[in-house]
Amino acid sequence: MRLSEKLNLVGLFMYTHSRYPDRQPESRTDKQIFVQATATWMLNRKWSVLSGVEWMRNSSTLESTYGFSRVGANFAVTYTF
Image (cartoon, rainbow, N blue to C red; front, side, top):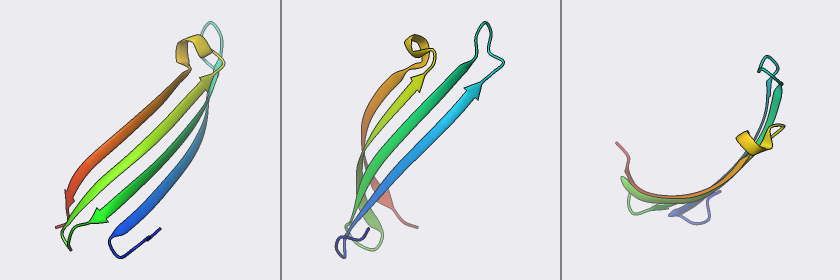
């Protein structure tokens, strides 16, 4: 989404459902949700600054081993060739 001439905002949502039926001694099913938001500020035609945040949650039928949550942030300076 273009918020201004220099500022863009991008959002991402992903859902993944995974099955591991042959896992021994018991099968496993995971559900993963991933959400990300990224903003890009154009300094000029070639250079920009990028910043974002993300959140992920993996729930599993074997929750104590494979269940987790994660939060992250990023920052970058980019150059367009």
